[in-house]
Image: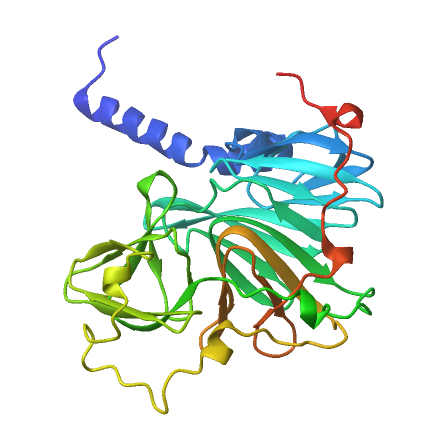
Length: 338
């Protein structure tokens, strides 16, 4: 049969239209399960113990009925239950008992980012491979505010009804980190895991082992807990431990802090008294920004922070009830077959 050019063009348009309408047709004609199956998973539950459920477009399912995690899925762990998740950016999460978390995939500038919405419970960020590209690449939303993470291993605990423990014995406090960014005009970068550069902000922590780099036409001042000050500018690459740079703020001539630096505020700790409702976090490695806008607090390695009904603060110690020290016995956890 002879097919004219016009007929071929019409057939091509029909094929394109059918392809574009395929997701809607799957949902309308075949139910949500097929449309959900057509999505690429953004992670999976690799191990669990006790009662763990996954809520997706098909409703609530108890594991091991569904192991793959898709965009918008909610994972719920029961009492005395645990789950280990592996997400598409190589990050690993451990969920404690009584946890509810939603895992979403956001798209900005044609790139995909993981957004975690922790409604309640305990979460351990077990892998330091998450959020490598940028401070905004990974975020955790909590009922008390947002947390931005970079290459972090940390514990996050939402305190609801067991918040009576004191914040710690002052005699046991330690001062961390070694330094903090106190002034920044332009951009200052930290060279992190696998050479990825992370932009630092004012009040972000700096450690002696950190490798730093200034952008062109930029200037920064870092204050250290021992009272020394480091300043650098215009494309310099340096290590935070370099004594040759700790000569004061001369590289940033336009920076003059009113009344001098308050080192106690920079490196001291906040006594929170009786723990109240809020979200607590302890950073094992990496950096976390708690809060948004002007109400932010930067915490880093070996530091703890609290965010409740006021601005987030750094605190000296971490309530023992919040730690995920008691991990499930691997021999008793159910693991997926590889």
